[in-house]
Amino acid sequence: MSDSTTKVDQPPVGKIRQRYLTALAALLGFAILLFFSDWVISFVIIHYLPGLGGYIRYLWKGTNALIGILGAYVIYRILISVIDLQVKRRSSKGAGEIQKLLLRVAFYFLAIFIILTAFGVSTSGALAGGAVGGIVIGLAAQTIITSILSGLLLSTSKTLFPGDIVLLKSSYWGSTDTLVRVIRVNTLYTEALTQNNSKMRFPNPLILNYVVLTHLNSDSTFDYPLQVSINADVSASAVKASAQKAIAKELARLKIPKPEIILLSKSGGTSTFTVMLKISDFLDVNKATNLVNMAFDGAYWEAKSSKK
Image (cartoon, rainbow, N blue to C red):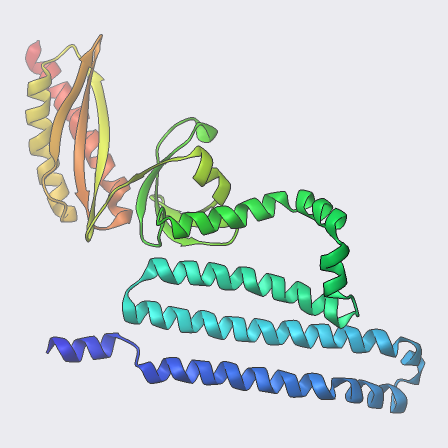
């Protein structure tokens, strides 16, 4: 039974081969289109648009560049779909993201190469004599290059993978914890889903250099540490016992197990508790934290009134 399920869930090898053949057919089709494009443009201008005769060379070059870039993009998208099938078959999301990132960078460089070649710019001459220009371009594109390299480092170092649930902490947003689930690591940005079900994009250099990451994943669930503070004018143990009972009852509705509650510190006029929530659905975080805070609030006033 399990073998049949595996065969259904995993894409067949034949489907992957079919994508490769599609990429090869697309490459051949665009090559043929590129071969006949100059003749077609000349025929149209001579017979139907003679007024554009003076621009025919520019039309040739522009059309060749457009066909080349379009062909490269179609093949790029087919190869991305092949990587997705391989990831699904091998269950290796990390390797797939690295491959897609490298393929995306290669496509950008290929597009630049196609444009330069189409308009007659010697790429070998540009590489040989472009030291000064390279420095200027490098300085101008420093932010983009840094983001690309940061994205490669995030993927290859296994720092972030799609599906990871992490706490982000940085002085850039007041050193407060931001809980996110990583969606993808792109060339320039890391895209993530917040606990409020909104998408955010973080620049890769920011995450790599200025953010403290705390991974919370644990198989199909994750442990979310929630800190709750109350005034220390009532018994901390009484508040803990009352809150724990109310929390267990309320969280059962969300199918969240009874959490562990720890008295983290008691200093001055404040008692601080850490509630270790074990959550399976990422979007249940807000509901769970609301229930915990309300339970502690009720336990505090209950202890306050009994003290009187």
